[in-house]
Amino acid sequence: MTTTGGISDFALELDYDDLSAETRDALERRVLDSVGIAVGAMGSETTEKIRTTVESMNDDGACRLWGSDRRASPPDAAMLNTALVRYLDYMDSYLAPGETPHPSDNIAAVVACGELADASGEELLTAVAVAYEVQGALAYAAPVRNKGWDHVTHTVISAAAGAAKILDLDREQFQNAVGIAATAHNALRVTRTGGINEWKGVASANAARNAVYSVLLARDGLEGPTDVFEGQKGWMQVVSGEFDAEFTSGGRVHDVMAKKYVAETYAQSAVEAVIELVESEEIDADDIDLIRLDTFAGAKLIIGGGEGSRYKVRTKAQADHSLPYMLAVAAIDRDVSTAQYEEARIQREDVQSLLEHVIVEEDSELTDRFEEGEMPAVVEIEADDERYRIEKDAFPGHPNDPMSWEQLEGKFETMTRDRYDDEHRERIVETVRSLDDSDVAELVSLLD
Image 1: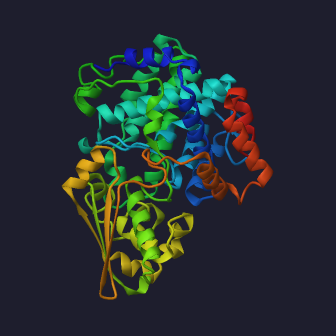
Image 2: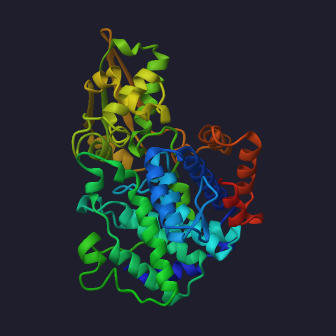
Image 3: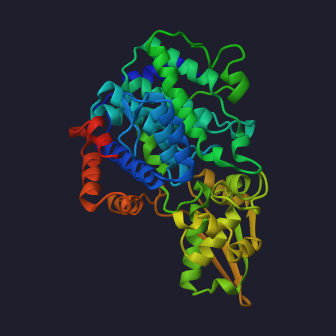
């Protein structure tokens, strides 16, 4: 049975030397991917609202607000910087059968506490490994989606674990931190059902902020309910059911996918399939009468209409969680990137008309394949009295086909080219790729 003591013992016992060379490399990739996405989100309307709020409450602080020279308290920096990582919906995902969280939601919280602690790059990677492990283990052993809880209910625990690790809390403090975080900050699934709004892209930032605040309270001696999981009316009784999570020496990071497209996790293979089919068969989007996707249960549930209609699409928050929109715009534009989520593009008649002709169906066989580690998609397009078919089981970035450093650096360049010149980008990449010889302060100094 999982307890705050078990999580604390795992985290406190994990050292940098326990991480294999392959795991260290994978963790560095996750850091670079997350930083690049954050830079790409700088200046977006939603994240600027958060920046305004955070800056209004902070004249100074220990931590940098990415994208400026302003500083703030660790919780407020975690709030804004996590929102930057998360907002575009281009972040990584852990593919557990019953839950798909985004471990990169932890990184900015760990970095903020790393600034506070003047941490080394090795300490940063170790704490990130702790956060990824805890998030992945909870998602695998204790999924909460079908019980009405949002996946950031896991994030507040994993981010607290990573933050507590890099701040070097002792066992009692660590347990109190996890106890406070897991008791006080459970999030409702309504965030991602029905008519989706801006909070969808911000909920994990709120979880990261709450995690850091919980850790700082525990560091300063505040006690929390250390029986939060197994106790009477605790997490297992109310939130998850009984479970026993297993932790590895950072190995879960290898089961994390990176997104090729700016689209919800479960859409990646389907978008890849549509683009490949229209390009290879030279299908004119104006001739398309129907796009049919057979997919697995999670995709149908979350972005295919199982938790509310996905055909009413007027905003970015609705568009990046609508398979009808994403497949329609992929067929027309042959790409799904940030440009496809501009309001004018979303509301244009061509895509609004075509999305009404997208059918999404669940296939139990594909669900079985997803639970065995694939991300299957079967796409049929009817156009000009012809029918075309393609099947995918993964995409570039899936754990079965991970992105190389070259591919990740290409993604990073795309996200950062409008803000940084070549020399600045190269400095960030080199700093991340050599974190064992660098520190958190050097990395953060580059995120202006």
